[in-house]
Image (tube, rainbow, N blue to C red):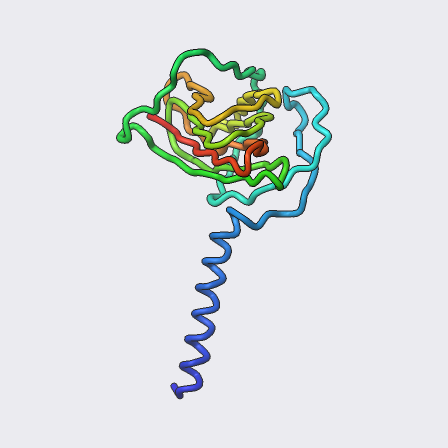
Length: 189
């Protein structure tokens, strides 16, 4: 191989590596064009969701092979009980997403594909939450309705599962009410 070929191969390899890094960072900052919130037939939330959202590409794509069946909606209510995360050895999965205030409504998708017993969300900043769709391996979709309420920094226990269930994905529709809001999702055993 001549020096120019080596340079060309090295340059191409470097460019591909840089592109891979850019794609990995893209999930956090670069977004797809605003689109309407997609509400599938059977979705239990009936209020008019007539807004544009920015749809974030999930870091981990997960396929749900079973047909989707929407369970009755659960209205999220905050109780004056302090919520704490389980010990670190019981946390099976975690991921985070940052939403800037100027993005308005954002649909974040978290690919989980792990078995657990409870889902938590830690918010840093202030955020207005619309709803979360939690999709299980068997196609059940549990919708948690936050009813567009604003939450400040703190930990929320979104849902406890009866027994250990394989959570495939979580879709969250929210917007930042402070300069930015960070959402950290946890699945506990």
